[in-house]
Image (tube, rainbow, N blue to C red; front, side):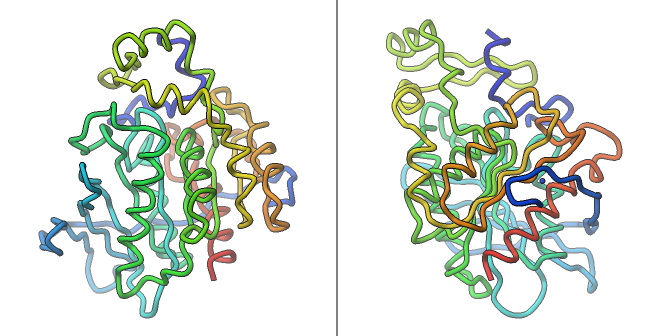
Length: 324
């Protein structure tokens, strides 16, 4: 069963789970730096318990760990906020299958400070139901629940004094890209721009007839991993995967999309990024292909950060332009 799942998963081996030409290829140079952090405890509103990370007077950003109430479950999240005056655009970061809010190789944890410090963009990265620090059962994770969590995260950011609530974007890695596209398609009043990293809009190949039969019999099927405990994937997720055409849904979104992909991705075919952009009518939409990068943008290579920042800079430049 492990072999069938690899084509659409965010692979993470060493951590706890886990290009710009108009529709043309481009190469990148790594840039960016992240600040060193220490932590202190603070208390937020009634629905949150916050841990704020700082590193002295020169700190360019602040990270705060929160919990967002979303009805029947809590959403663990980390907010990364630029320490500059004024209102900032914000981006909701969505993780891939079997991963968590910091992403494979801490890819999102490395990216968020760069987006804050270099591009003035606030971010919130979240754990989906049953992932990371979430105490909810993974059977609650569906296409609809993922979008609902993304919306709850965006609404939390809109409520912050130093966030420009009219300029919020969403991004997702692998299956998280699917969730980002649906979030924008179903809630264009909230999300104004989209970025996908190795986006996987079609996850139906994860679902064999045997697994579908297992889900119909038990209410879920078991998804196995090499790096974490198995997940129970709900029958509703199966129905979503079989019946929701994400690219068709996304075609209704009129905002811009940037589809970032490593040319050496053998997990999700880079051609999907071309299809994502082709499904969108905005003239500012484009692909960004990166030579030598795999599905996880080489985050397990050394030096880890340098392997990632081509994707981060393309993302930062795009959101800074589209969310201004």
